[in-house]
View (spheres, rainbow, N blue to C red):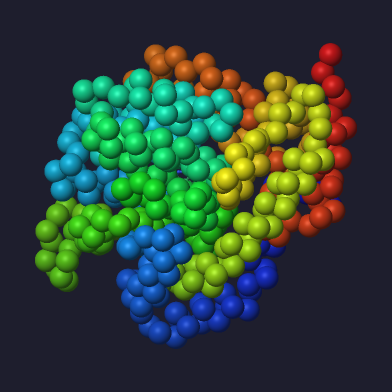
Length: 370
Ligand SMILES: *Cc1c(COP(=O)(O)O)cnc(C)c1O
Protein backbone atom coordinates (compact mmCIF):
# COMPACT_ATOMS: atom_id res chain seq x y z
CA UNK A 1 0.00 0.00 0.00
CA UNK A 2 1.28 3.43 -0.97
CA UNK A 3 1.43 6.36 1.41
CA UNK A 4 -1.10 8.84 0.01
CA UNK A 5 -0.40 12.56 0.08
CA UNK A 6 -3.62 13.04 2.05
CA UNK A 7 -6.50 10.61 2.47
CA UNK A 8 -9.67 12.68 2.89
CA UNK A 9 -11.57 9.47 3.40
CA UNK A 10 -9.45 8.70 6.48
CA UNK A 11 -9.72 12.30 7.70
CA UNK A 12 -13.54 12.17 7.68
CA UNK A 13 -14.01 8.50 8.61
CA UNK A 14 -13.66 9.14 12.34
CA UNK A 15 -16.56 11.58 12.24
CA UNK A 16 -18.73 9.50 9.88
CA UNK A 17 -21.56 8.90 12.35
CA UNK A 18 -21.73 12.52 13.45
CA UNK A 19 -21.50 13.76 9.85
CA UNK A 20 -24.32 11.48 8.76
CA UNK A 21 -26.48 12.63 11.67
CA UNK A 22 -25.81 16.27 10.80
CA UNK A 23 -26.65 15.66 7.14
CA UNK A 24 -29.87 13.90 8.14
CA UNK A 25 -30.77 16.88 10.35
CA UNK A 26 -30.42 19.24 7.38
CA UNK A 27 -32.29 16.94 4.98
CA UNK A 28 -35.15 16.61 7.44
CA UNK A 29 -35.27 20.35 8.12
CA UNK A 30 -36.39 21.18 4.57
CA UNK A 31 -34.27 24.40 4.71
CA UNK A 32 -31.06 24.32 2.67
CA UNK A 33 -29.68 27.82 2.09
CA UNK A 34 -28.95 30.55 4.69
CA UNK A 35 -30.63 29.08 7.71
CA UNK A 36 -29.83 28.26 11.30
CA UNK A 37 -26.92 25.91 10.58
CA UNK A 38 -25.05 28.69 8.77
CA UNK A 39 -25.87 31.23 11.51
CA UNK A 40 -24.74 28.81 14.21
CA UNK A 41 -21.53 27.96 12.37
CA UNK A 42 -20.78 31.63 11.78
CA UNK A 43 -21.10 32.26 15.49
CA UNK A 44 -19.00 29.24 16.45
CA UNK A 45 -16.27 29.98 13.92
CA UNK A 46 -16.06 33.65 14.93
CA UNK A 47 -15.72 32.55 18.55
CA UNK A 48 -13.01 30.05 17.63
CA UNK A 49 -11.04 32.72 15.77
CA UNK A 50 -11.53 35.24 18.55
CA UNK A 51 -13.33 37.83 16.45
CA UNK A 52 -16.82 39.35 16.56
CA UNK A 53 -18.16 38.33 13.16
CA UNK A 54 -17.96 35.52 10.63
CA UNK A 55 -19.85 35.44 7.35
CA UNK A 56 -20.16 32.14 5.46
CA UNK A 57 -19.62 32.24 1.70
CA UNK A 58 -19.26 29.82 -1.20
CA UNK A 59 -15.48 29.30 -1.14
CA UNK A 60 -12.16 30.81 -0.11
CA UNK A 61 -11.63 32.81 -3.28
CA UNK A 62 -15.02 34.48 -2.84
CA UNK A 63 -14.20 35.18 0.82
CA UNK A 64 -11.12 37.19 -0.21
CA UNK A 65 -12.86 38.81 -3.17
CA UNK A 66 -15.88 39.86 -1.10
CA UNK A 67 -13.67 41.53 1.50
CA UNK A 68 -12.16 43.70 -1.23
CA UNK A 69 -15.53 44.20 -2.90
CA UNK A 70 -17.07 45.38 0.36
CA UNK A 71 -14.21 47.82 0.95
CA UNK A 72 -14.86 49.20 -2.54
CA UNK A 73 -18.57 49.59 -1.81
CA UNK A 74 -17.63 51.35 1.43
CA UNK A 75 -15.33 53.74 -0.43
CA UNK A 76 -12.07 52.52 1.13
CA UNK A 77 -10.73 51.06 -2.14
CA UNK A 78 -11.02 52.25 -5.75
CA UNK A 79 -10.31 50.86 -9.21
CA UNK A 80 -6.57 50.74 -9.86
CA UNK A 81 -5.51 50.75 -6.20
CA UNK A 82 -2.56 48.50 -5.46
CA UNK A 83 -2.59 45.53 -3.10
CA UNK A 84 0.72 44.03 -1.99
CA UNK A 85 0.72 40.24 -1.99
CA UNK A 86 3.45 37.58 -1.63
CA UNK A 87 4.87 36.44 -4.97
CA UNK A 88 4.80 32.78 -3.94
CA UNK A 89 1.13 32.39 -3.05
CA UNK A 90 -1.72 30.35 -4.54
CA UNK A 91 -3.28 32.10 -7.53
CA UNK A 92 -6.54 32.79 -5.61
CA UNK A 93 -4.88 35.54 -3.56
CA UNK A 94 -4.23 37.45 -6.81
CA UNK A 95 -7.52 36.56 -8.48
CA UNK A 96 -9.45 38.11 -5.59
CA UNK A 97 -7.53 41.34 -6.18
CA UNK A 98 -7.75 41.53 -9.96
CA UNK A 99 -11.41 40.52 -10.18
CA UNK A 100 -12.12 43.70 -8.22
CA UNK A 101 -10.15 45.80 -10.76
CA UNK A 102 -7.43 46.32 -8.16
CA UNK A 103 -3.75 45.76 -8.99
CA UNK A 104 -1.84 42.90 -7.36
CA UNK A 105 1.76 43.81 -6.53
CA UNK A 106 3.65 40.57 -5.84
CA UNK A 107 6.73 40.93 -3.65
CA UNK A 108 9.50 38.50 -2.76
CA UNK A 109 8.91 36.47 0.42
CA UNK A 110 11.21 35.91 3.37
CA UNK A 111 13.62 33.10 2.46
CA UNK A 112 13.16 31.23 5.75
CA UNK A 113 9.44 31.52 6.52
CA UNK A 114 8.24 31.68 2.87
CA UNK A 115 5.88 34.45 4.09
CA UNK A 116 5.81 38.20 3.44
CA UNK A 117 9.01 39.97 4.40
CA UNK A 118 8.05 43.26 6.15
CA UNK A 119 11.18 45.04 4.87
CA UNK A 120 10.35 44.16 1.27
CA UNK A 121 6.70 45.10 1.81
CA UNK A 122 7.81 48.46 3.15
CA UNK A 123 10.00 49.01 0.08
CA UNK A 124 7.05 48.17 -2.20
CA UNK A 125 4.65 50.70 -0.66
CA UNK A 126 3.97 53.45 -3.20
CA UNK A 127 1.46 56.28 -3.74
CA UNK A 128 -1.26 53.87 -5.01
CA UNK A 129 -0.79 51.20 -2.34
CA UNK A 130 -3.96 50.81 -0.28
CA UNK A 131 -3.79 47.29 1.16
CA UNK A 132 -1.59 44.36 2.10
CA UNK A 133 -2.83 40.81 1.58
CA UNK A 134 -0.81 38.65 3.99
CA UNK A 135 -0.97 34.93 3.23
CA UNK A 136 -0.30 32.50 6.08
CA UNK A 137 1.36 30.08 3.69
CA UNK A 138 1.47 26.38 4.56
CA UNK A 139 -0.24 27.12 7.91
CA UNK A 140 2.38 29.45 9.33
CA UNK A 141 1.37 32.96 10.34
CA UNK A 142 2.99 35.82 8.47
CA UNK A 143 4.83 38.36 10.65
CA UNK A 144 1.58 40.06 11.66
CA UNK A 145 2.98 42.38 14.39
CA UNK A 146 5.43 43.94 11.90
CA UNK A 147 2.85 44.04 9.09
CA UNK A 148 0.22 45.61 11.38
CA UNK A 149 2.69 48.31 12.35
CA UNK A 150 3.49 48.94 8.69
CA UNK A 151 -0.18 49.03 7.71
CA UNK A 152 -0.90 51.50 10.48
CA UNK A 153 2.04 53.73 9.54
CA UNK A 154 0.98 53.93 5.88
CA UNK A 155 -2.77 53.84 6.55
CA UNK A 156 -3.24 50.57 4.64
CA UNK A 157 -5.84 47.84 4.98
CA UNK A 158 -4.36 44.57 6.24
CA UNK A 159 -6.18 41.51 4.94
CA UNK A 160 -5.31 37.93 5.88
CA UNK A 161 -5.52 35.10 3.38
CA UNK A 162 -5.99 32.47 6.09
CA UNK A 163 -7.11 29.69 3.73
CA UNK A 164 -4.26 27.45 4.90
CA UNK A 165 -4.06 28.54 8.50
CA UNK A 166 -7.22 27.74 10.50
CA UNK A 167 -6.09 27.53 14.11
CA UNK A 168 -2.56 28.89 13.64
CA UNK A 169 -1.70 30.89 16.74
CA UNK A 170 0.64 33.54 18.04
CA UNK A 171 0.58 35.28 21.43
CA UNK A 172 -2.76 33.62 22.18
CA UNK A 173 -4.39 34.99 19.02
CA UNK A 174 -5.54 32.91 16.13
CA UNK A 175 -5.27 33.38 12.38
CA UNK A 176 -8.04 35.75 11.31
CA UNK A 177 -7.74 37.95 14.41
CA UNK A 178 -4.72 40.02 13.29
CA UNK A 179 -5.84 41.98 10.25
CA UNK A 180 -8.86 44.17 9.45
CA UNK A 181 -10.49 41.11 7.90
CA UNK A 182 -9.55 37.56 6.91
CA UNK A 183 -10.70 35.06 4.32
CA UNK A 184 -10.88 31.31 5.04
CA UNK A 185 -11.50 28.34 2.75
CA UNK A 186 -13.23 25.12 3.75
CA UNK A 187 -12.17 23.23 0.62
CA UNK A 188 -12.06 19.54 1.68
CA UNK A 189 -8.24 19.37 1.87
CA UNK A 190 -7.84 22.45 4.12
CA UNK A 191 -7.22 22.15 7.86
CA UNK A 192 -10.93 22.65 8.46
CA UNK A 193 -12.48 21.05 5.42
CA UNK A 194 -16.11 20.68 4.38
CA UNK A 195 -17.35 17.88 2.12
CA UNK A 196 -17.56 20.31 -0.77
CA UNK A 197 -16.76 23.98 -1.23
CA UNK A 198 -17.14 26.60 1.48
CA UNK A 199 -15.52 29.72 2.85
CA UNK A 200 -15.86 32.46 5.44
CA UNK A 201 -14.84 36.00 6.19
CA UNK A 202 -13.98 36.90 9.76
CA UNK A 203 -13.65 40.44 11.10
CA UNK A 204 -14.23 42.65 14.13
CA UNK A 205 -15.68 45.33 11.84
CA UNK A 206 -19.50 45.22 12.12
CA UNK A 207 -20.04 47.51 9.13
CA UNK A 208 -17.82 45.39 6.89
CA UNK A 209 -19.43 42.13 8.05
CA UNK A 210 -22.94 43.46 7.43
CA UNK A 211 -21.99 44.67 3.94
CA UNK A 212 -20.47 41.29 3.02
CA UNK A 213 -23.55 39.46 4.34
CA UNK A 214 -25.64 41.49 1.89
CA UNK A 215 -23.19 41.28 -1.04
CA UNK A 216 -22.97 37.46 -0.85
CA UNK A 217 -26.75 37.23 -1.30
CA UNK A 218 -27.44 39.21 -4.50
CA UNK A 219 -26.82 42.49 -2.68
CA UNK A 220 -30.14 41.96 -0.94
CA UNK A 221 -30.92 42.87 2.66
CA UNK A 222 -34.63 42.10 2.55
CA UNK A 223 -36.00 39.54 0.09
CA UNK A 224 -36.17 41.03 -3.43
CA UNK A 225 -34.80 44.40 -2.38
CA UNK A 226 -31.33 44.86 -3.91
CA UNK A 227 -29.03 47.55 -2.53
CA UNK A 228 -25.91 46.55 -4.50
CA UNK A 229 -25.02 44.49 -7.56
CA UNK A 230 -24.08 41.57 -5.38
CA UNK A 231 -23.12 37.98 -6.09
CA UNK A 232 -24.48 34.58 -5.17
CA UNK A 233 -21.86 33.08 -2.87
CA UNK A 234 -23.37 31.44 0.18
CA UNK A 235 -22.18 28.70 2.47
CA UNK A 236 -24.97 26.13 2.33
CA UNK A 237 -26.76 24.58 5.28
CA UNK A 238 -25.38 21.11 4.62
CA UNK A 239 -21.72 22.21 4.57
CA UNK A 240 -22.29 24.43 7.63
CA UNK A 241 -23.76 21.49 9.55
CA UNK A 242 -20.81 19.27 8.59
CA UNK A 243 -18.31 21.98 9.53
CA UNK A 244 -20.01 22.31 12.93
CA UNK A 245 -19.23 18.64 13.52
CA UNK A 246 -15.56 19.07 12.64
CA UNK A 247 -14.75 22.45 14.23
CA UNK A 248 -14.58 21.13 17.83
CA UNK A 249 -11.88 18.65 16.74
CA UNK A 250 -9.74 21.17 14.86
CA UNK A 251 -7.23 21.82 17.65
CA UNK A 252 -6.83 18.09 18.24
CA UNK A 253 -6.18 17.59 14.53
CA UNK A 254 -3.60 20.36 14.48
CA UNK A 255 -1.89 18.70 17.44
CA UNK A 256 -1.63 15.47 15.44
CA UNK A 257 -0.28 17.37 12.42
CA UNK A 258 2.28 18.92 14.73
CA UNK A 259 3.36 15.48 15.99
CA UNK A 260 3.96 14.37 12.41
CA UNK A 261 5.90 17.57 11.66
CA UNK A 262 8.05 17.17 14.77
CA UNK A 263 8.88 13.57 13.82
CA UNK A 264 9.87 14.66 10.33
CA UNK A 265 12.00 17.43 11.76
CA UNK A 266 13.72 15.12 14.19
CA UNK A 267 14.30 12.21 11.81
CA UNK A 268 14.87 13.63 8.33
CA UNK A 269 18.55 14.51 8.18
CA UNK A 270 19.74 14.78 4.64
CA UNK A 271 22.22 17.24 3.17
CA UNK A 272 20.03 17.82 0.09
CA UNK A 273 16.73 18.27 1.95
CA UNK A 274 16.09 21.54 3.76
CA UNK A 275 13.40 21.31 6.44
CA UNK A 276 10.94 24.09 7.30
CA UNK A 277 11.76 26.05 10.42
CA UNK A 278 9.38 27.85 12.76
CA UNK A 279 10.04 30.30 15.55
CA UNK A 280 9.34 28.86 18.98
CA UNK A 281 6.54 31.18 20.04
CA UNK A 282 4.25 30.28 17.18
CA UNK A 283 1.75 27.53 16.75
CA UNK A 284 2.12 26.53 13.14
CA UNK A 285 -1.11 24.91 11.87
CA UNK A 286 0.95 22.53 9.69
CA UNK A 287 -1.44 22.54 6.76
CA UNK A 288 1.54 21.49 4.63
CA UNK A 289 5.02 20.21 5.47
CA UNK A 290 7.18 21.76 2.77
CA UNK A 291 10.84 20.93 2.27
CA UNK A 292 13.27 22.50 -0.19
CA UNK A 293 15.54 20.49 -2.43
CA UNK A 294 17.59 21.61 -5.43
CA UNK A 295 16.94 18.20 -7.00
CA UNK A 296 13.22 18.49 -6.25
CA UNK A 297 11.93 16.54 -9.25
CA UNK A 298 14.43 13.72 -8.64
CA UNK A 299 13.40 13.62 -4.97
CA UNK A 300 9.73 13.45 -5.89
CA UNK A 301 10.45 10.59 -8.33
CA UNK A 302 12.51 8.79 -5.69
CA UNK A 303 9.74 9.09 -3.09
CA UNK A 304 7.17 7.83 -5.55
CA UNK A 305 9.34 4.82 -6.37
CA UNK A 306 9.16 4.05 -2.62
CA UNK A 307 5.37 4.41 -2.72
CA UNK A 308 5.32 7.86 -1.09
CA UNK A 309 3.13 10.49 -2.78
CA UNK A 310 4.11 14.14 -2.55
CA UNK A 311 2.90 17.36 -4.17
CA UNK A 312 4.32 20.70 -5.27
CA UNK A 313 2.75 23.87 -3.83
CA UNK A 314 3.11 25.41 -6.35
CA UNK A 315 4.97 24.57 -9.56
CA UNK A 316 4.44 27.95 -11.30
CA UNK A 317 4.50 31.37 -9.61
CA UNK A 318 1.42 33.55 -10.25
CA UNK A 319 3.50 36.20 -12.07
CA UNK A 320 4.63 33.48 -14.51
CA UNK A 321 1.12 32.17 -15.22
CA UNK A 322 -0.54 32.63 -18.61
CA UNK A 323 -3.42 34.25 -16.71
CA UNK A 324 -1.23 37.25 -15.79
CA UNK A 325 0.61 38.46 -18.90
CA UNK A 326 0.98 41.94 -17.36
CA UNK A 327 3.12 40.46 -14.57
CA UNK A 328 5.48 38.49 -16.84
CA UNK A 329 8.07 41.26 -16.78
CA UNK A 330 8.53 41.06 -12.98
CA UNK A 331 11.86 39.83 -11.66
CA UNK A 332 11.26 37.74 -8.53
CA UNK A 333 14.25 35.37 -8.42
CA UNK A 334 13.67 34.03 -4.91
CA UNK A 335 9.99 33.36 -5.61
CA UNK A 336 10.94 31.50 -8.78
CA UNK A 337 13.64 29.51 -7.00
CA UNK A 338 11.12 28.46 -4.34
CA UNK A 339 8.70 27.26 -7.01
CA UNK A 340 11.51 25.14 -8.45
CA UNK A 341 12.59 23.67 -5.11
CA UNK A 342 9.57 23.16 -2.82
CA UNK A 343 8.06 19.75 -2.18
CA UNK A 344 5.18 18.96 0.18
CA UNK A 345 5.48 15.69 2.10
CA UNK A 346 2.40 13.79 3.28
CA UNK A 347 0.88 15.25 6.46
CA UNK A 348 -2.58 15.04 7.94
CA UNK A 349 -4.58 14.40 11.10
CA UNK A 350 -5.29 10.78 10.21
CA UNK A 351 -1.75 9.81 9.21
CA UNK A 352 -0.54 6.57 10.74
CA UNK A 353 2.83 6.26 12.51
CA UNK A 354 3.97 3.55 10.06
CA UNK A 355 3.32 5.90 7.17
CA UNK A 356 5.25 8.71 8.83
CA UNK A 357 8.18 6.31 9.22
CA UNK A 358 7.92 5.26 5.57
CA UNK A 359 8.14 8.89 4.47
CA UNK A 360 11.20 9.38 6.68
CA UNK A 361 12.88 6.22 5.33
CA UNK A 362 12.12 7.21 1.75
CA UNK A 363 13.67 10.66 2.29
CA UNK A 364 16.72 9.23 4.03
CA UNK A 365 17.37 6.80 1.16
CA UNK A 366 17.43 9.59 -1.45
CA UNK A 367 20.87 9.24 -3.07
CA UNK A 368 23.08 12.16 -2.17
CA UNK A 369 23.63 14.30 -5.24
CA UNK A 370 27.24 14.38 -6.45
C1 LIG B 1 -7.22 27.21 -0.99
C2 LIG B 1 -6.72 28.60 -1.03
C3 LIG B 1 -7.53 29.67 -1.44
C4 LIG B 1 -8.87 29.52 -2.11
O1 LIG B 1 -9.79 28.74 -1.46
P1 LIG B 1 -10.96 28.01 -2.31
O2 LIG B 1 -11.95 27.61 -1.29
O3 LIG B 1 -10.33 26.85 -3.01
O4 LIG B 1 -11.51 29.01 -3.26
C5 LIG B 1 -7.03 30.95 -1.33
N1 LIG B 1 -5.80 31.19 -0.86
C6 LIG B 1 -4.97 30.18 -0.48
C7 LIG B 1 -3.62 30.52 0.05
C8 LIG B 1 -5.40 28.85 -0.56
O5 LIG B 1 -4.58 27.87 -0.20
